[in-house]
Amino acid sequence: MNRFILIIPILFWMMSCQQSSQEQQADKQNSNHWSYDGETGPEHWAELEGETNCNGNFQSPINLVNFKVNKHLEPIDLHYAKETLLHEVVNNGHSIQYDFEPGDFLIHNKDTFHLKQFHFHEPAEHLIEGVRYPLEIHLVHQNPDKEFLVLSVMVKEGQNSKPFELLESYLPIQKGETKLIQAPFDMSQNLPDHKGYFTYQGSLTTPPCSEDVTWIIFKEPIEIALEQVELLKYLMPINNYRDEQPHHGRVIYSTSF
Image (cartoon, rainbow, N blue to C red; front, side):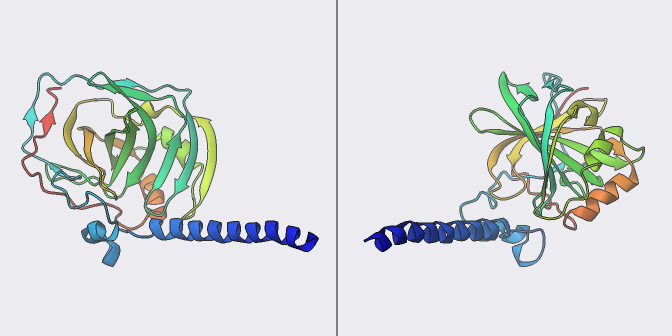
């Protein structure tokens, strides 16, 4: 009887370990389902990832051309604070991503969108009148209804960027690795001085390619040093960008400023 009582918890422990191992393996397989080239590249995302919008009609990125100037578009209502904490940095195998603690947000159409994370694409995903910049930063925001708004910042090679020095101090980081940061970071220092922008309705640029995403792309790029671009390029997959998608009748608006 005593032996039977002892066996029961051991069996539960073995089953728990097996289940945990299976879950970890499933997570690993899911994270490796898609890539940026070959048989797991963007042209195969819809078939690889199952229930996605990757073959939808309103996908991103796009070439920002034939836009309409909208005089009613106002400056972005940004609320980025110097004391907001960067929580961690992760190399997820697709990009280098920095996650924020709660604090920074913006207001769009009377709705509050909280800044969750930012990551990089090299070269840029969006084109501005056919021009592709060396780097694009996506600042991913989400409202309480789980709707996305993404601010996009184009980057060109030029002067050394002081704000990037803090980001660089946690690099290099290996694929699959996460590093805790817990340091204040003023995201507004990584935005262009001129805040004119383009806006349109699109999607996430990675699976599941969810649509109904509001995109706001700054017209003016920021500058970082060539060495800073090269470091990010070295750590990320080669050409981690999705090709431009058809407009399908969507209207692209531009601020008058």
